[in-house]
Length: 145
Image 1 (tube, one colour):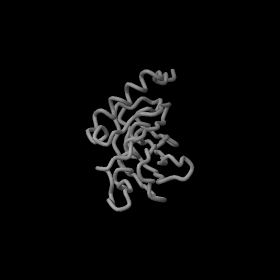
Image 2: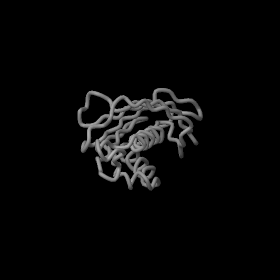
Image 3: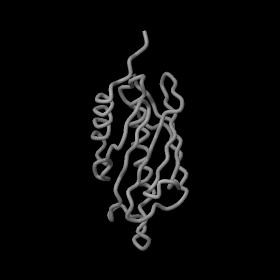
C-alpha cells in the first residue's frame, strides 16, 4: 500500500520544527515562504550585521550558503517518503553575482532524485531582481526513515 503524503498542515509543522531546531535560522531571520512535497521556498532579509563587506554592503556569501542549506534540508524533510531527519552530506554552491544590498534573498529548493537513504536536491537563491540568480546549489542529504 502506498504511503500517503503529509497534508499541507503537516508539511508546515514539519518545516517549522526543522527550522526552529536550528538556532542560526532564527538569528538570520529566515522565514518559510512556500512548501510542497519535496520542495521548499525560504527567505531572509538583508541586515547590516550580515554584511560581508561594509563598503559595498553586500551580504556575506556564508549567509547565502546557510539559507540554501536550510532550504534544501527543509525540502528533503518534506519528501513524501516522510523522513524523520536529514543532514547535509554534500552541498556545492556556485555564486553567480553579489546580492543587491538591502534586498531580501529568497531560496527555492527541490528534490530531483531520492533513494532509500539519500535525497538529491537543487536550489537557487535570488534577490528581489527575481530573474538573475545570486547563487545555485546542488546537494545530497541523508534521509533517516
